Amino acid sequence: MSVKIHDLFARKAGTSLAEFSTYWTGTHAPIAQRFKQIQHYVQCHRIQERPLVESFAPTWPDGCAETWYVDADALAEMVASPRFSELMTDETQFMNLDRPRSLLASHARLVDNNGFDASARGVKLLVFVARRSDLDETAFMAAWARDDDATLGQTLGASQHIVCTPAAAGILIQTDKAADDTGANARPYDAVRELWWPSLAHFEQARTQHPGAWTALLRLDAIDAAHSMTLLSQERVIIA
Figure 1 (spheres, rainbow, N blue to C red):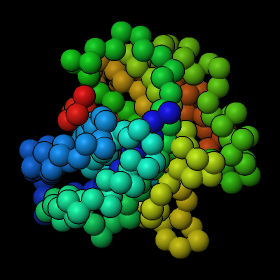
Figure 2 (tube, one colour):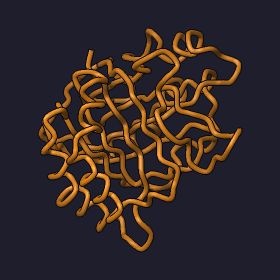
Figure 3 (cartoon, rainbow, N blue to C red):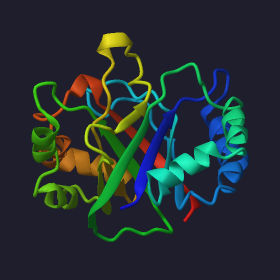
Figure 4 (cartoon, rainbow, N blue to C red):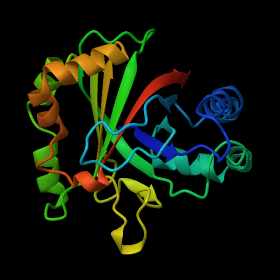
């Protein structure tokens, strides 16, 4: 099973969201495209800053890069490449590298694909969740990824629904920590849920008309809401 990486980061101070997005796609992405180890690459550009869930942590990233690799060895091979430093150097041009940065390794599983149009991807919601401290990994996954996932997503009108779980036991977050946390208070994300809607209006309508399904899918009984976060975004496919 391939390994998927979620790389979360904020934009450089003094850079507008539009400038950040333009540079990321137009200048930085072509550098990443040169690495043969990357099987698939999409960019998720933040479109809304306001919290979607009152009890969740603020949305701090301006973007999330998602890349897929055959396995962890392929990722390590890319990082060891002499050209990898070029990619890292270019990050200083548009990213705020002083902020904590989360890099997550996971396996992605398709829950449902009910009318998803790859040519008109609409809006994408990523929900990064931290498990409750009293739940071990097995108990958390049983409570968070349930048999009714597909039904709840369909009730909300999601066109596609994916869950991402740790690529290795106990290891989802690879570096750093959740933003605005320091030291012993830092908490990693334990899983990611991804949902797509045809448009922002469809997403907002789903939450308004089906609040019960929305709350149920958040799995508030299984997560540490204060250390969980949403990122509402638009996708740009760089490597299909």
